[in-house]
Amino acid sequence: MITGWSKELGFQQLGVSDIDLSEHDKRLSDWLAAGFHGEMDYMQKHGSKRSHPEQLVDHTCRVISVRMDYMPPDCELSDTVLTNPNMGYISRYALGRDYHKVMRKRLQKLADKVKNTIGEFGYRAFVDSAPVLEKALAEKSGLGWMGKHTNLINSKAGSWFFLGEIYTDLPLPLSQPDTKRTDNNGTPENHCGSCTSCIDICPTKAIVAPYKVDARRCISYLTIELHGSIPVEFRENIGNRIYGCDDCQLCCPWNRFSQPTREHDFFSRHPLDAPDLIDLFNWSEETFLKNTEGSAIRRIGYLRWLRNIAVALGNAHASKKVIQILEEKKQELEKAGDVMVVEHIDWAIEQHSE
Image 1 (tube, rainbow, N blue to C red):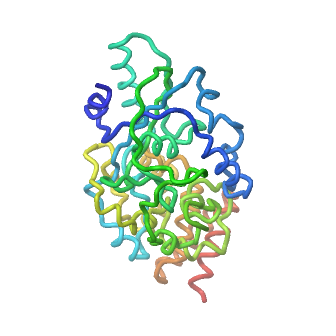
Image 2: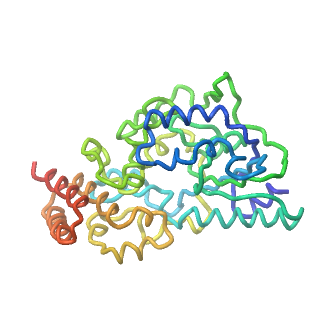
Image 3: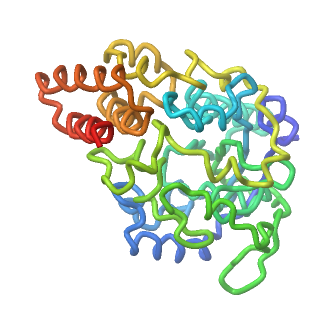
């Protein structure tokens, strides 16, 4: 019944897991101890709540996990944008409406359907909004397995999908997992085989070992999570990626099974699927806020937006127009005292003077 409701609400799959995340607890602890989380302090400030759902929401005994496809059917081919250094590449998940809002509303509707059928019950819905090990829970619920790039992969749908959860006190029957456990460390059956495409293609070598990502090197972290200056050593390899990075998914053989989203909220907006870098750099803060209204992109703010584009312009084809726009924006930001962005503009100008 609940699976049918989830499909009516636009989710492609639903699974139910228990709350035993003991095997993932050590992995998380080791990852944090290595400092791979960078500035993402929220990954550790909640203590053990992330790997103990019952500590986050009292009386939780089951987690309902759902997935929803997000690849826009109307966007420019990723390779077309990535191979044109005068365009800006935005991760395909961010081209439409903010997924947090879309999925949270759908999860609430799903919970309402359950409540209307059985009466009041304990629950709380999450969409990347709390200390939740969503990929581990989705794996346990049968939605897929963790790939070497640490994204969840589904054998019939690839990896272009969002995840959401409902923590509940209902003792629902468990779903059958999509992957078997093969050793005491909880290592999943290797559906990735000997493939290392995602590791090999990563521009900044952020996948430091199979199933292990150093976020401090990851372009998604550098362009979204990092608040300050992007380390010089990564700027050239960032290329024209101005918000996130999809390389590890674009090369994954399993994504030949992925399907474009049917959710209109995730279709490309404004159109940001193949934007001109100079046009974007000319946006005022007011234009930025207007064009990113309802979008996940807005979360990085105007200055980090300019920072990212400055790096991309440093990697663009050299031209008088590129240098002119960089120098004009530098003068504008120097007056405003925006030192961090100016430093990136200086770097970009230097790339074209060599």
